[in-house]
Amino acid sequence: MKARQILHPADAKALQVLKQERGFNTLIKYFMKVGEERIMHGENLGTMLRVSPNNMPKVYNAFQEVVHCVGIDEPELYIYNDPVMNAYTYGDTRIFVALSSSLVERLTLPELKSIMAHECGHILCRHTLYKTVLHIIEDMGKAAQVITGSLAFPAYCALQYWNRMSEYSADRCAAAVVGEQVFQSALLKLTSGLSDIQGDPYQLVEQGKRYYEMKNASFFARVQQACREMFYSHPQNCQRAYEIDRWKSSANYRTLVRENIENL
Image 1 (spheres, rainbow, N blue to C red):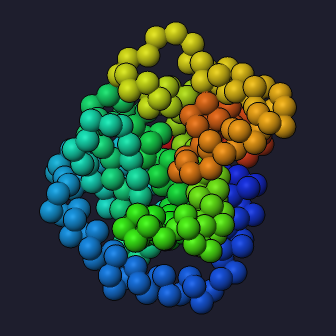
Image 2: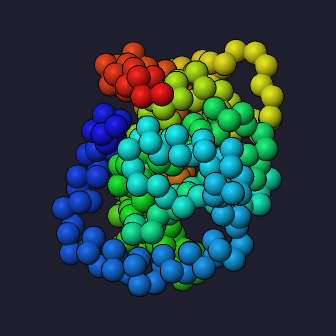
Image 3: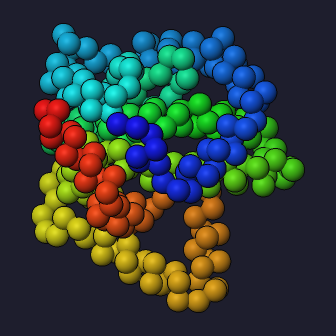
């Protein structure tokens, strides 16, 4: 799999701008290597469960299959204790993926692979460095309360916008690895928090259509919703479902699904 096959247009445009800041990128990479990554590695070993061939082997084998499909070097995989279903990836030279315990408990194995593939999509697209930068800025801003009242606010909003767009690219990776219907099923569970969903697997797609109809009804509605979403780290789940439903008819999606089937 190539990053260009799954990159969302808005994500690709924003990434190009970020990559032009070479001095900034070099500084952040060095900071990550000598400081932040070591801190997080200690945190992982100290507070999370490392997944390996001898520990949670079914989860580990599923992760290996996803990593092979995406075509990246295998990151470290951890499970952390949290009743909220969530996952994240972090780092630059020592990248890891972390899954909440509730994901492992409530999702089927194909649905769990969808979440894993989403995080691996971030790695494939080289999102992890900039996402880490955003998290550091947010943490520093909360501690010093300097973001919202400073000149950094517009840059922060722009980086947060890119952060949301990057999720669409990672969603495409997930859909390509497990199929768009499994992706939609996992997203329904993430949205509801339920372990068993009965009914229309495309319910969120329909809600996405209704949402965009409402949002595009007037200029005021567009501004209102844009302001509401400004500080979100992720697109709303109905938007994510709608975007994948549109992308499933693309040549890139069909090609990637066919290649994954052939490689099984």
